Length: 393
Ligand SMILES: C[S@@+](CC[C@H](N)C(=O)[O-])C[C@H]1O[C@@H](n2cnc3c(N)ncnc32)[C@H](O)[C@@H]1O
Figure (tube, rainbow, N blue to C red):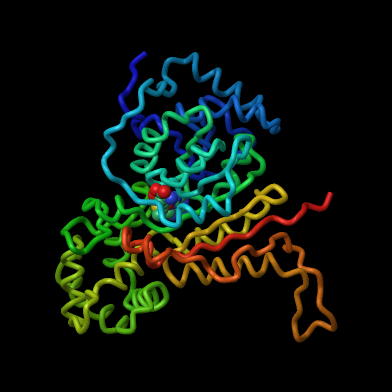
């Protein structure tokens, strides 16, 4: 069997959501059903899934065994770890995350945003098992190589965390001791000119974290109505000059479609000349990134189901990087932590059917001055953590 030196994206599990059908582990895809190529890291997962006593483990084992025999299935990982990985990302609030999640041998954690694998690595080093997910195949390839030494306790899935429930339910995992989502983009993604996240370098106007995502920033900028552009710039960028900028874009694209980051940055600068230190395109690029990846929608979908994937006493940790995200996390946590709901039109408060969390952080945890000095990106990070209450039987 050919052994690749690093797990190539083509062999990685691709769990982007497709409409679930009755069975997931068939070797063939039936029209519109699931496609579940299993990667080597999932092979490493099944022994401890079995130990966890979860239902569905036999299905996992059967699927893996049948794939092993085909010769066309996933490749085995190389045996020695690669120590020469390029820089990818510095995990933020690492000590604080580990303090709250309390990983240890026997614990099972879900890292919904694997990125460079820094948080997952710390969980694994503490002896826990980790199931991780990311929508970016580059992140998965990097972190899979980095974490190869822990392959027995590490499993990685490609997909959008907004669909994690369907994906994990189908592979037989039920509940976790902790769930982490460190949302947003990694330093590697920001620096990757081909993704177009930075307008400091010229690159395609893409901004997708998932390279197979349905729309690029160029699609939005060249096709949305002026009104829709205004709404995106206002809502996701809180850009005060949204109208002027949207008008400038619509005028510019009438001559020729806008294809690159620098083209767009120049159009924005012309419509809204620089006044302070911040480049006038900053908020518009943030807004487009949020819209392209539907970041707020994905976060809301994730928060709708994440608490019920925790064991009693299990903890949910969310790191966000701007106020729009933090507001969603804060409101969602507050809702889950409220025992009774009250409305002016109700004669009396009613029990909250979603009540299941206890807040461990009333205010978000921020990075220490030492951390922000070493990693300026940590400056805007906000960590909120909540614990699952005892589950009524
Ligand atoms: C800030 S980085 C995570 C860094 C990671 N904690 C580490 O220690 O290296 C965020 C990662 O989450 C991924 N991501 C963001 N939104 C996602 C989503 N909705 N579904 C899956 N992955 C997502 C990005 O592709 C990126 O790799």
